[in-house]
Image 1 (cartoon, rainbow, N blue to C red):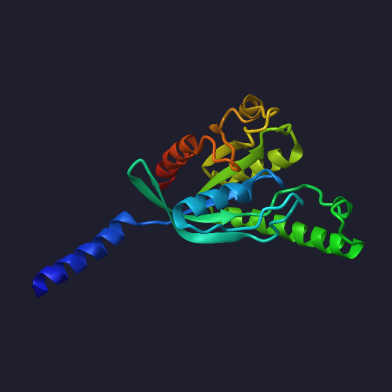
Image 2 (cartoon, rainbow, N blue to C red; image 1 turned 90 degrees about the vertical axis):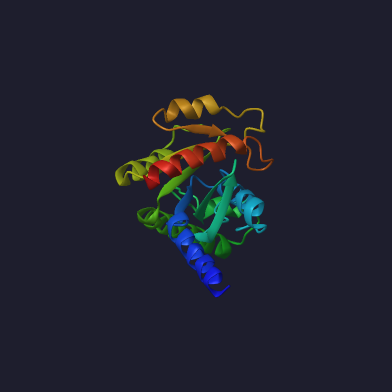
Length: 215
């Protein structure tokens, strides 16, 4: 009996060593209000029962990097463990005046702008720690802008595997093809983080990319 218990114990240890060799660090990047936190929340809720961050219509709601360890995603009988990292929205210019229209005082708006600027710097620093990055873009917006080029440029420089998500396909004016044309070197998956549309294809692409990054 004792031998059997010890055998099971060692088998479990070996399984943990070989099966959970690495927690893949998965970063979510993109401009403000593209839906990064909405997507992270949906994944975390589906696989852990808990959301990660707060979602708001006010830009730069996420002003600090937030993460959840050991999120095990089970897709078609395959399992992978991720450290989910939600980052503040990247912007090339943050003006406190943009916050005044959300009924903030001048003092609050200036503080928000300062925190958002620090958040952008923190986001870029965290790139050095990423195994894979999901770039979340708003499919209703023009993808040809300086912010998106800055994000992609930073990823190219670090040779990080990338999956581009065209979010908000539930909105009529969403144009996934425009995002595909803007970033032809990357796979683009159209989803709705709000309603969970097309997440199957997202997981499929994520698992493919994860295997490449591990290999």
